[in-house]
Image 1: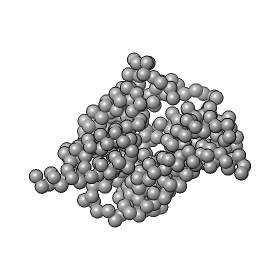
Image 2: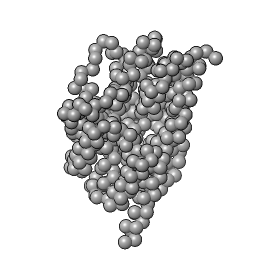
Image 3: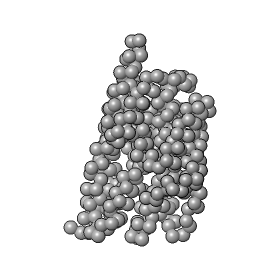
Image 4: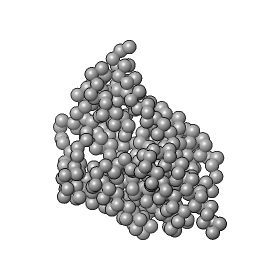
Length: 111
Length: 234
């Protein structure tokens, strides 16, 4: 299978799954209530899933499959964390994080 | 103006202040698709069909790293599991007025359409809630698609030395902060962070990501149970 057709498989599978996640509670409304343990577990999905996407990419770079600790990324992510906390604004978080990364990378390569 | 049109426009206006916030997000999503080696068709098709930005960026990045398809789709679906929570909470508001649209009424459910419908739309006497909800999503979907296309076009010209891939965790970081509403959320995030830092380099094929999310979810759920005082239903 070519990379392009595999990517379309990902798109279609993700689209179908997401459509079901959104639609099932509407379709089933008034029939079967979702079990309480499921609701309790799902309540922390946003915090857990977003953290999992932030942390490894803020600590490591990956070259040829091997993870290496990346000090510049750790510094930049810390700056972005403070800005995100203070401003709660995606644009400022992006600008501050990218600027900090470039400065840190330049400083590390000079030192 | 009919009540339906009026309601749709009211929904459009309600999300206007948050439009600017999704532009950088859409740019990153589009750029990720071209960075992974694909083109406009994939960028546009993915946004139309999946309609959930965070999962699109995550799936694209995982695919580009060579993760297996099952892990790629699985991780992205876990991110979208919050749609199920939104669905459960918005169902009593939408379903009684859905009529013959019930089959497709889930598709416009995104973070922002959920937020404005639950906090404003359903309380207004002058609007019908279903067209209001669809209207709020429509504006977002159009702005998203434009920024997505712009990102896909621009992304292919940006040199890799700019480390633009770092924009992806930054976008998620900006989304994470408002998701930390309660103590149990913060604890779930910390548990996930530790698990992810250790497990992601250790486990093969990005399976550490799902493992870390699961550990954080379970941790949050158990803490939740011990501290019912922090539980505040929205």
